[in-house]
Amino acid sequence: MINLFKMNVRDRYLGSSLGSFWAITNPLFMLSLYTYVFGFVFKIRLPGAEATLVYVIWLISGYGPWIALNESITGAANSVVGASGLVKNMAFKTELLPIAGTLVGLINLAVSLCFLFVLLVWSGNPVTWHLLFLPLVMALQFAFAAALGLWLSAITVFVRDVIQILPTLLTAIMFMTPIFYPFEKMPAIIQKITLANPLYHISEGYRVIIIASRMPDMVGLGYVAVISFVIFYFGLRAFRRAKGAFDSAI
Image (cartoon, rainbow, N blue to C red; front, side, top):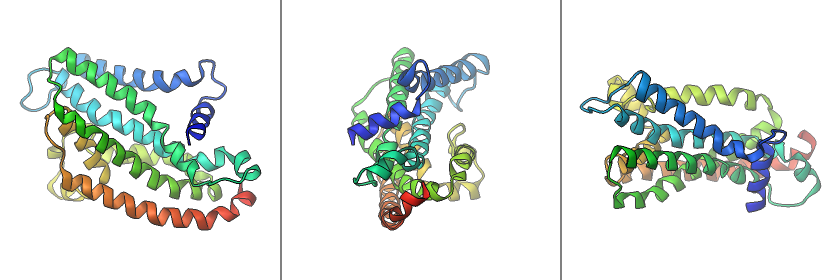
């Protein structure tokens, strides 16, 4: 699994002069850009907050995990096609490919959390014991991404357009999820629909732990766990049925 993870990271930045260093600089640049734009140019404030940096911390606590999830899903979707040489020439559990592809998002998440903690210390926000719940939310995030990745990686082998459509689709989902705006700003009927969105519960889990210093909503996280298990279970069965045709389709 570790070797597959390293291969995914290496292949992701193959041909670039800085190599895997881009895995750190890309999210770091985007987070710095958002901090500058929303913290020092537009100076957006959350309702009831006096400092503009409060919004930036709130934004990054949701957007940081999102870019990690985006990278995980994209990496998993392209994992089988990207490792076509291995799939054709080696006998191994190809189910590991989308899971290893999912783990690529760990780099983005680590960079985002480190950047966020720097902002927290800079702004004087307390760092509490509730951070111990972060590994739970992180595990559920990657379980959900791996579950989707099993489906997407198998479909991509036969429908290559998935790789082209996926970035646009993920961007649309991001703006339909309260990442850049509070949940309370959504119309009432959309709020009810959003409660069925696992991505909302994941991002809210980070925000409650990091910003509000509270335990996350265990009911919401339990919902994510159940959804992830169901998608993973049926995705694994579908993947194993389809992988016999991978050699001829790749």
